[in-house]
Length: 235
Image (cartoon, rainbow, N blue to C red; front, side):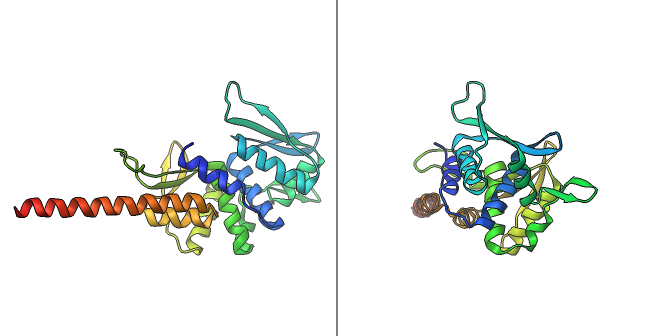
């Protein structure tokens, strides 16, 4: 199991307040979901790792009393599709501020601006959901020669969601970098301390401790190499 999967699994094992569950689901659906509709009723489908799909089904079952359908993806053993289209999924989409009901009809809200009006715990839950839906993290391995560096990113296609994620991180004291990749906005961090602090923010304690061990080991190894080089040059 890679480090990114470990981190995501930890996020799915956390307990969240009711308001935070909605923020997390809203971000996950916005970053990974497809909008479904039938006879004026709206729903969604997402394609994720099995553990994330189980987590989503559990959250929705507890909050709305209905479990989404789950489908296998071809021969994939690790990923599946979670799908729901019913009166309850319609309510979920409205509660998540993805849909807005007005007298003249139902409208899709393409930008999650309402997140910025929420409490800090909901904002953190939102970036957790965005990470589950469109994020990844890679770190070097101990005792292994590798070109892998510390890197955490969100691959976001919607500019409005990108702006909200950046605003949340800035408010929390982080300065993310942004590049374009295949018509998507990639929000990323490549500093070891920032990556570790964000994983801690996500509540992924075990992953954070593992990363701390890697950072300390790499620093000690680099310091030792510098000492040996200096001693060799002095001889």
